[in-house]
Image (cartoon, rainbow, N blue to C red; front, side):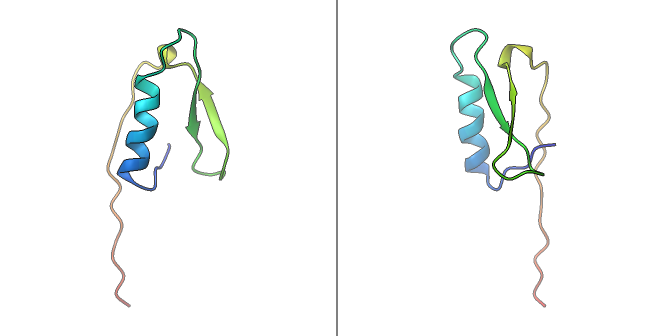
Length: 61
């Protein structure tokens, strides 16, 4: 599972995925467990993607 800190960060990453023009090009997928580390995939090898919003609780304590 990959987590993005903001919707803008996800949209920027997704545009890179959609706009990967060269066949066989690679796209970096950030790993949420390791800061600064990426999984490298070929967009044409990705069959599906599931996107879920992640809601955080507001702690007023």
